[in-house]
Image (cartoon, rainbow, N blue to C red; front, side, top):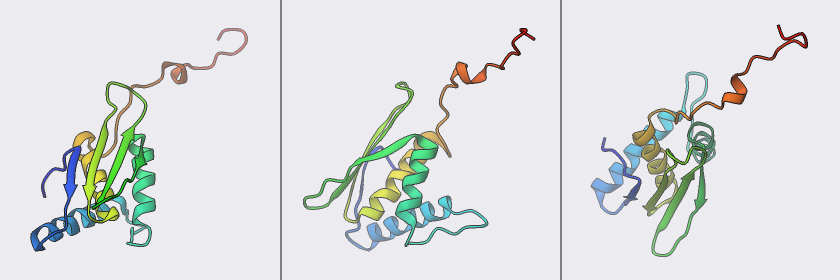
Length: 129
């Protein structure tokens, strides 16, 4: 399976492209599933959006449409690792699957952000010990 670029097209025109879209969507559904829960077509979009937010601190910020659609996603947090994806697609679900794959191909399973030093402090007793 090919890597998905941050600016890509989930085109389903023709048998070969339709198969590629199906393969990447199946990868995304398998990726989001775990032993006790299998992601289905019915909840794929919900699960993908939650995973993008929880694991990559990314939100879908737009889904414009004309001749086809585009899924525009922006990560937040550390400005050094923020990315923006622009995935054109014939079908929104394919675009979301490609978006998830683009984030995975760029960051791995999740995005590691620098730790906040304030959260690492060990609370002290009033006597300083």
